[in-house]
Length: 235
Image (cartoon, rainbow, N blue to C red; front, side, top):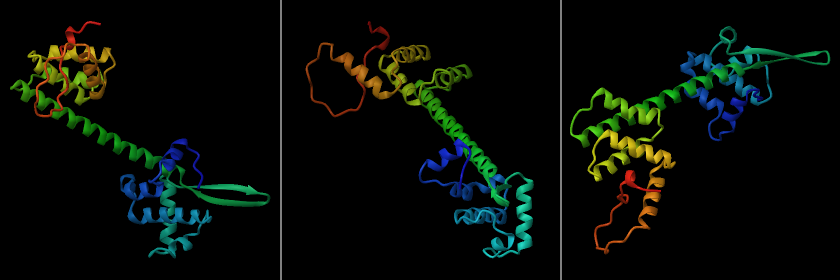
């Protein structure tokens, strides 16, 4: 099958998910019945075998419905804009074939909408977990303004929940447990382009290489990040 849309080509080339598999999973979201979906899949199967314009009878022979029912389904699919008939001339001969491009485009729209909704739901879940972490650490319920501050770090400043949580840890270790202090830490990290925990850890470890080392004492292994006061660091 040929796909004129670059977006369709990208979906096809992604590897292990074919258009047919996507359709089988999401056809109900397009408000197609089981019979309509089966007719579409039969059309795809015929075209994969170089039969571009199967007759209703040929399709019906693969299903437990009559050719009249198949013809009615094909008509409905065309009325809804899912199916087109394309004509081409080869000399004096006119050839016809079924075209499903518009159906695939709407299918991908549907899949992308589902993914976007899932992404929003995940983001809201992570934000909720972050709010609870802050409230547990501060020992009280936050005000709407405080929620707004944390949301701003996520949505406007683009900090990940993990980085914001680490800034909270730094504030607790510095015994300066306030959103204003945490905001300043996040500002410093963003200014230094420290956008991941790994980058923050490496920057912190680099700082400690130039500090006077205290006598080494044996202790239990820990994964805690080296701490220093980010806001008092001098370039």
